[in-house]
Length: 244
Image (tube, rainbow, N blue to C red; front, top):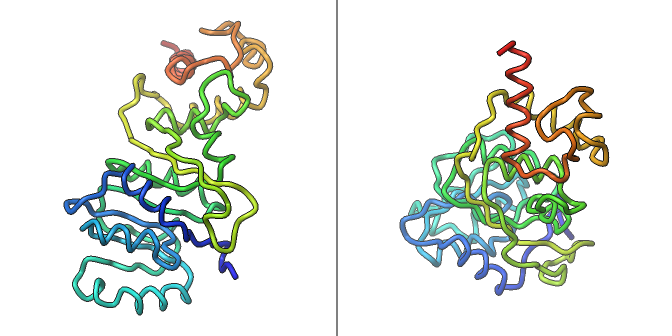
């Protein structure tokens, strides 16, 4: 039975796909969130990486300590018991994880705030599509813009529910995340979030009608704009507030 909403990856094929996508090697320190029974952990260690595994479930922590006792003793596996949204992470350069889906959004943004070279993370399919959706797709959303502002994201592989035990009710997807410097930096992060929330709450209306003023791209709907164009709009509103 799944504990704490965990569904354990049992199909080795998808472990290898994730490891290949992250290009894991002996120079890497890899953060793994929610290692469960250790399918990904084992693959990471086999490729020579040092692993920092964060597990919330005390039962699974005991299991992992027993299964990987030698790796823990050698220092190639550092097992951290705690909530991945709260614990302090030791240094790492890559993320490879089959995360608990209920913390997908806050964990993704926490990781992006910390920074890393590349992440390969398994998400619920619907969430993965929203993360990676381009303008014009019905799935293009606040999440899409917020993530794509900070990183290049792509779906690497769709993972069927049959790859897990017990099987979840939905399919999953392996997503590759490569943080980047924004093409156009946001001048006010709080305003950025507020404008995204407002515009996507009225996504079918023209932007000038939502904001009640003439603005750049005012005759467009937010779902039609590329991320840099949305940032340009937000920076215009920021400058207007400052009286520039």
